Length: 243
Ligand SMILES: [Mg+2]
Image (cartoon, rainbow, N blue to C red):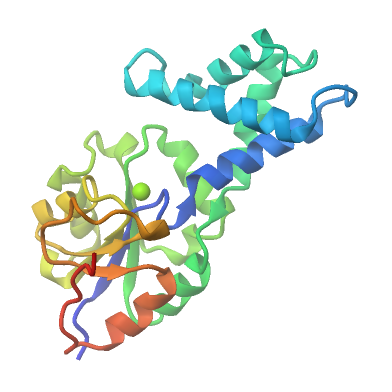
C-alpha cells in the first residue's frame, strides 16, 4: 500500500544546485568578454565567488535587495579591476539571464522526479522572493513539466517554515498533510516547516551535511536516487540519522 499520495520538494539545493548555477553563469560572463587578454578564468571565478559571498551577506543583512544581488557583485568586480573593461550592468544582466535559463539540476533530480510522477503527485514549496525568476528556472531546467504544483514565497507572501505556505500546496493538491512527504536540504525552513505543517519530512543530507541540529524523526537520504526505493517500502522503519 502506498504511504503517501504526493511527494513535495524544496527547490534550491534539493532539486536545483544553486551554487553550481551561479558558477555556470559566472563562466558564461567570462566567456562573453571581448577583451580576452587579461584575467585568467581561475582568478576571475575566485574573485566572483569572494565578492558574491559578500553581496549575499549584505542581502542577508537587508542592505542589498534581492533583485540587485548580481548588479552589486559586478559593480564591485569592476571597481577591483576584474571585468577588464566590461560594463558591470551588462555583465550583471548576462549573468542573470544565464542563471535563469541554465540552472543546474541536482544529480538525479530529473530522473527521480519523472519516476515518482508515475505514482505520486509532485510539487515544490520554495522560498524565493522573485517568483517569476524561480518559475523560469524550473521551466528551463526541465523540472516544471514534472510538477503538479509550484508554490513560491514571492507569490504567497509567506516563507517556510511558516506552515501557511505548505497549506497552500495542500489546498491546491486537495490533500491532507499526512498524505504528503516533504523532501528538502534545510533543517530549518524545510524540516521545521514540514513539521509545522504536519507533514512527514525526508532530509536530503546534501554533501553529507552535519546532522547535529536535527532532533525530530526523519527519513534521511544522501542522494535523490534513494527516494523511489524508500517510498516503495511502506513497512520499512523510519530511518534515523546515523551521525
Ligand atoms: Mg534548499
